[in-house]
Image 1 (tube, rainbow, N blue to C red):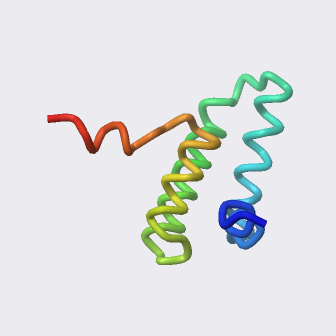
Image 2: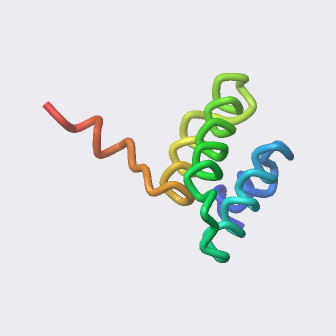
Length: 77
């Protein structure tokens, strides 16, 4: 089992719920997709700043579910 798989299994319930709702919204082409995206983004940040997940976990989740790769931004001069 990879560390990423372990991370996803141990996410706080509110974050798992938001990710599941977002995935369902994508599958159903929901008109609320922007709202669901925002909920996932906010829940990741909430978990990060509450020290429930690490920065590495937050970056992984943002990249996997939201398409945000913050590592690209770090190398901009």
